Amino acid sequence: MAGSGDEVKLLGAWPSPFVLRVQIALELKGVSYEYLEQEIWENKSELLLKSNPVYKKVPVLIHKDRPICESAIILQYIDEVWAGTGPSLLPSDPYDRAIAHFWAGYIDDKVCYS
Picture 1 (tube, rainbow, N blue to C red):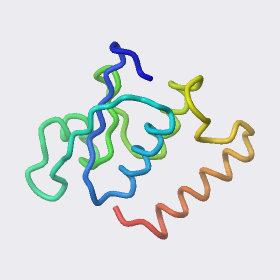
Picture 2: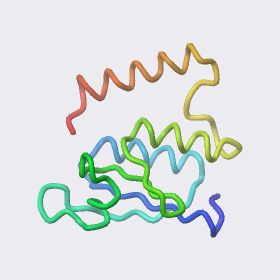
Picture 3: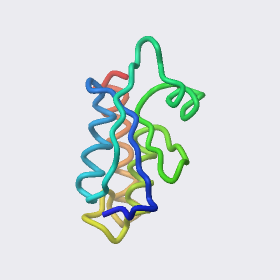
């Protein structure tokens, strides 16, 4: 479990498969987090705009007051920061990890809508 000094927040929105991906990863790793539902179409929060000023979208993981954006990047971050906790999210072999990244990117581009 994340310690009390490891404040973790997830900015998300219920219809996003990208947010769900991050929620599953946090649950698998056993990381405690605060979920903050965001309005993604209108009236975006100041926290979201400050945390993701480039794309202004969810998900955003905030760990120790530092935002991490984009679900694939967030998954890699979770896997590395909480490496000794829960199962690995990505394969340890570089080739297998590259293949996993390829298929995740393919699904993001061809199957999911942002």
